[in-house]
Image (cartoon, rainbow, N blue to C red; front, side, top):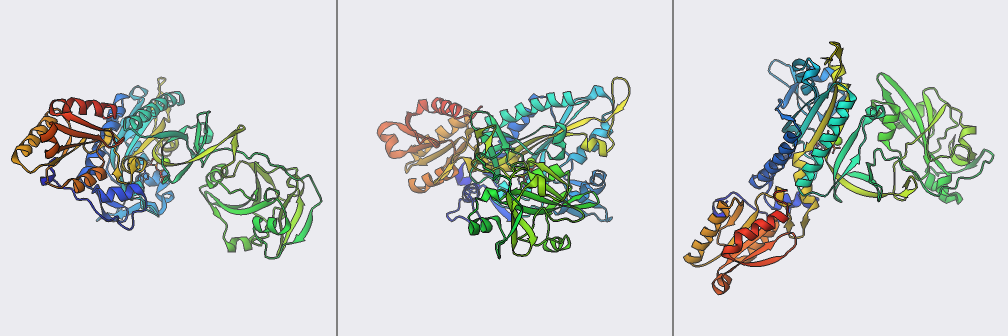
Length: 576
Ligand code: ATP
Ligand code: MG
């Protein structure tokens, strides 16, 4: 593309609302235009990269026998009502009405739509297994759209859905799609890890789910890894434990005054206690179907509740911390609550790190008082259970091995759905014996636009983007610094020879000086920068090639140009 005739504007200033490098760089390098909060126009440079990402995704899906389809972006409420998700989805689902007052939504995902396709087109086991996928627009009215394309409201997703007669078949296909995902992100040249993800209540039935995470400081997900073991999980599910806990021996239960000391930290500091000898009481509201219940969750004083683990363990539809009015109604005093309190609809849960036969300090259920010598197994007045409920943190171990936490950006997610959708939507298939069975499903997502932003988040420097060669908008930034028509003519010939060789070239023929041109070249960060400088070329007959990623610079004669460039691009992973 000739820049003199092209559509490409870079910005000198970083827009105020761009907080992280990828967002700043995508704005400054003219990749995206903000239409409104969480809504972006993909400009030509970004669009080219997105098409490359999509091409890699398509090739790897087609390789394992998936079929591309396209479902409507707008879907009818009836489908969502069949599975109950019309209510469950909440405000992130953008709902609209057509002229006949029929309810519709802009799809945030498409399990219902695809299950409808499956149930109306697949009758026999002979048609299975099958996997359909699409690459199209999704809309989620995110509470906090931010970081540009990383968390948009409208975004492009690849979503795939497979259908199987039984768990063995689903497991076999899961391995295949997992392999395809590994291939996809490798080909894109990204530094990713695969982590065990939270599978909700379904995972309890042995359903597998994994996330593909790009390691980056700006990531919103926290990942727990155990070096040397290959173990990695999203913190939402990581079952780590603490090291070197030294619980107190049993003692008598005794109240003591703790005026204005409402947190474990405050009580521990005022009375010279070790924080792990105190227990914090959190009261959580749990909604399961029509029923509402309250749980007092007991954690070591410096631990936090993992709400995802809690929600799964409770098999709940919704969980949240109880509010002031609810605590009052239960007869509890905030800041001084403890598991010796009794109330209808209240049960107690101890985290697995609590030693049920040791002494702890807890709230005494009396304004301004806590109690020492609380022994869970002896003194709990309500029915109780012990479960792994805490959030993993630095210093934890898994099977005795120290963990390392990392930040990640979730770019892909594979998930065994089991019969969740096929059952509620009444999809059945006849087996070899002619009996109707409920088939099993898997679903597989990739955030296409998020992957683009994440790749920049992962690979940039202070001067700009450093594209992985496989998804760069162009291969080469070809700049010409020339006064004479003769050099300009040579530049044209070189440009033609690049095109003939199948190279993708951003040809800077704007007649800029080297300063501005090099700045733009670094900012857009194509894998190679090729510069024909008149003075050098006339003196030596050489053209400069610079590798953006390594800074390596080569001086090449015209004849060697195409061959060497192809070799460089090959090693940079363009044709991975
Ligand atoms: P997150 O936890 O980040 O909100 P999710 O788990 O809700 O994502 P999925 O329903 O698994 O997302 O969607 C599949 C993929 O779509 C995700 O792995 C992610 O790459 C992408 N994605 C989800 N939400 C967004 C968004 N708001 N903007 C861009 N991409 C998104
Ligand atoms: Mg996900």
